[in-house]
Every structure is written in C-alpha cells, then in structure tokens.
Image (cartoon, rainbow, N blue to C red):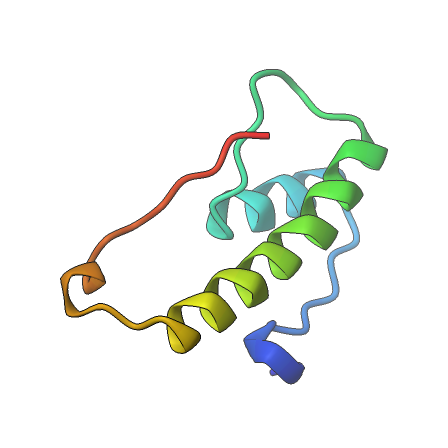
Length: 72
C-alpha cells in the first residue's frame, strides 16, 4: 500500500484502467479518454484524503455506514 491507503497497482491497458476505476467508485457518463481516466484517478485519492481528514476533525456517530457520492 502507498501512503494514505492507496493501493499501488501496475495497470497496462485501457480496460485495466476502466476496471480499476470501477473498483475505486469512479463512474463516467460515457467512455472516457485516457486523459479523463488519469485525471479521475488523481482526484479520487485527493477527495478521499480530504473527506477522511474532515471526518476525523469533526467526527459524528451518525455518519457510520454512510456512503457519499460526489458528482463533478
């Protein structure tokens, strides 16, 4: 594992990136370009870190088990 909980994976194909994106909760309205895939991966990790930092700074017991989806 990488710092911050990211899993280090070597992905060599477009289909592999799409599969990994799906596993990370990244969804697209239509088939993404390579650039859009790369951008999504860089943002998903930053958003996770931001969310985790906020939840740790302002914990609330009612948040347990809640999943948030963010559309950009």
